[in-house]
Image (cartoon, one colour):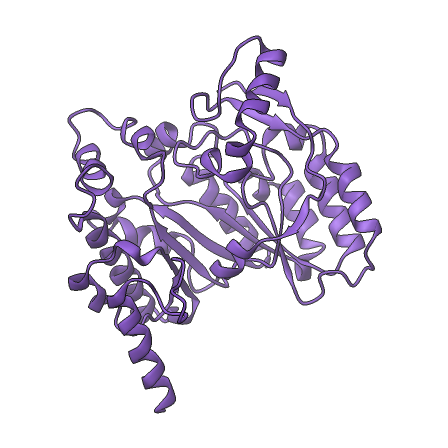
Length: 358
């Protein structure tokens, strides 16, 4: 997939706090290096997120001006929005801080885009930015990517030299390279990502698992267990996992499947007109139950971080989450701090009582 590069205004403050990732337990700050990366994953939530949505017309104008065609990210996976002043902006921002900035905290590179997007590597941006963070701050850097490049000899050497400052994860929700070619057209196949992860682990570099999102078909047979075992859960620091959630892009995802496929029908049941039928709840629950079972039986339970937007978990499924062990609830809480889902709120109260009684 050949990228269409469009230069857009660089954000004023690239390094910002990220409450969303704090809630996920991933990071305190975030640093993106692009407005939109080149990987074109059809399920990516960034295309309909606030940044691109609010500036939709402005960026469409710039796209038309620079490419001759008026198009939008949701319609064109090849669009890449480049910030050509990202290095000066980061330098200016860090100049206002002491080197102790970020001590005891984590910065994720990146949250909405991929730091190993080809245009960034070709221009040397990723390396320059990471050197700036290492030299000018005290952050621990969480590198999150879908690119196997991070496990190359060059990058393994660079990260190894600063291993006390890095933790690296390669996001993947499947081991199926053919699936990835349809849904993640610009990224390294899962097999290459796994090889990169294993090289990093062999070099003694801290790593984490990022099984986000795990689509329903991975639950067939031992698909999920094979995926978990492939990332070496006994070696990684944490295993984050998440089901595919009801985003506005679900039809785009569904349409990548053959018209007569079970997967297409399944997504329609989960997110179509009858989305209150419990189909998504059953899928999200089975994903958790099997992850938790594997974590307990293989002794990595304390590493599990299951990200659950719990609003659509039906009462008959809620009990499967027992004491919410390893679950990080992502839904907006009620005023009392408990989940708006009454069945999940009851579990929270039971868990609190059990804790206070020990």
